[in-house]
Image (cartoon, rainbow, N blue to C red):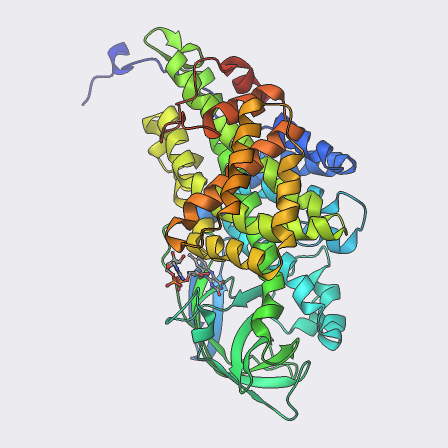
Length: 550
Ligand SMILES: Cc1cc2nc3c(=O)[nH]c(=O)nc-3n(C[C@H](O)[C@H](O)[C@H](O)COP(=O)(O)OP(=O)(O)OC[C@H]3O[C@@H](n4cnc5c(N)ncnc54)[C@H](O)[C@@H]3O)c2cc1C
C-alpha cells in the first residue's frame, strides 16, 4: 500500500495568470466601442453589451464544445433510407440561436437606422470570438439577401424566413419553418477561383428564365453548412453560368436530390461542416438573369468578403487581448512580462495591427450604411484591398500572440490554438489572396472613379503626419507611370492597404496609435517580424488601450 505523506503535495501553483473568461467581451473592449461610436453605432450599445456578455461566458464555452465535438455526417437512417443529415453538437445550435436572435444575419435588412451595418459588424466581431465556424452559415445567410432580392417571386417566399430572428434547425421543408438559413455552392473540383470552369448543368423544368424551376446535375467540391434550407448555386445553362436557389426540400415536400458525399476533415473552422455534394436532378429556381450568374452571386460574395475582414479583425483582436491579458499576469526573470521592453514592443505591435484591421473594416461598415455613390465605390475597392491584407496578416498575428503566451497557448484548451488554425481560412475562401489583388485592378479598370474615391479617402488624412503625406505623394506619383505588371501586384495592393489603414487611424484613432502605425508601416523601418516598432513609441499607452478591461 502506498504511504500518503505531506510530501505527496509536490508543489504550489503560482505565477499563472487568470484565464480571460467570465467577462463581457464588448464592455471590456474599448477599441471596438470606439469604432462603434465613431461610425454612428452608439444606439446599439446595449445590444452589443448583452452579446458581449454572452460571448465572454456561455458562448465561449459553447465555442469550445462545438469545435471539440465535430459535426457528424449520417448518409442513411437505420432502415436504409437516404437522409443526408449532419448532426451537430447542441453547442453549435446554441451559438446559432444566440447569433440569429441578436441579428448577426439580418440587422441592416430589418433596421434602416444609420449605423445598422456598424452594429451588425460589432455583433459579428463578438460572435467570431466565441466561434468563427458558425460565423460561416450566419454570414452566408446575411449575404444572400441582396442576391435573392433580385428575384421577386422567390424573395417574397423566402426573405421573411431568412430575415427572421428565429433559428430553426429542423430538417423539414422551408415553407413549414419560421427561420431559414442559406448556404452557397460555387466551387467545383476543377476550379474554385475560376468558376467559369463549372460543369454543373441546369435544365428548365418547363419554361426557361428568371424565377422559373430547373433541375441541376453536377457536383460541388465545397458546400459549407449543408443543413442550410437552401443554397445559392452556380450552374450552366446554354447562355452561360446562371445563379440558382436550390432548396434542401422540394416545394412538393419531398427531399431534394442534393446528396452529401462526405464532410471535409478540416484543420480549422471545425464547428462548421463543409461538405462535398452531388446534384442528381436537384430542383432549383433561377435567380436573376440567365447567363449572368456570376454578376448575380457577386453581390453575395462582396458581403461575405466584407465579413471575412471583420472576422479576421476579430481573430486578431482576441489574439491580442489574450496575449496582453496573459502577459500582465505572468512574471519572468523576476519581472512582469508587461514591464519587459522587448515584450512591450511585441504586444504593442500586435495591438496596433489588430486596431488597424478593425478600423478599415468598420470604415467599410460605415460605407455600407451610406447610399452615396462615393461610399459604394469605396466599398467596392475596399473589400478587395481589405480582404487581401487583413486576412493575410491574421495568420502571423495569431502565431505571434501564441508565442507571447508561451507553451500553454499551444494546448487545445487555450483558444489561441484554435485561433491559429482558424487564421488562414478567411484568406483562402471567398476569393484567395491573388484573386483579391486581381480584383483591385479589375475594379479600377471597370470604373476609374473607384481609384479617385480611394485617393480622396487617403487625402482626408493629410497635414497631420509628414511621413504619411510624403508616402501618399510618392504613391500618387507612382500611379502616373502606370505599371500593369501582375508580378508586382501584391506589392501595389499592400501599399494601398497600408496607406488606407494609416489614413483611417489618423482620422479616427488615438494619435499615438496612428503615430506608431505610420512610423512602423509607412516607411522602410518595420521589420518582417512583429515586435519591431521603433523605440520612441508610446508602448505603455498602446498596451493599456488594447488590454481587456476585466
Ligand atoms: C473551410 C472552407 C469552406 C469552404 N466553403 C465553401 C462553400 O461553402 N461554397 C463554395 O462554393 N466554396 C467553398 N470553399 C471553397 C473556396 O471558396 C475555394 O477553395 C477558393 O475559392 C479557392 O478555390 P480553389 O480551392 O479551387 O483554388 P484555385 O482556384 O485552384 O486557386 C489556387 C490558388 O491559385 C491562385 N490563383 C487563382 N487564379 C490566379 C491567377 N489568375 N493568378 C494568380 N494566382 C491565381 C488563388 O489565389 C489560390 O491561391 C470553402 C473553402 C474552405 C477552405
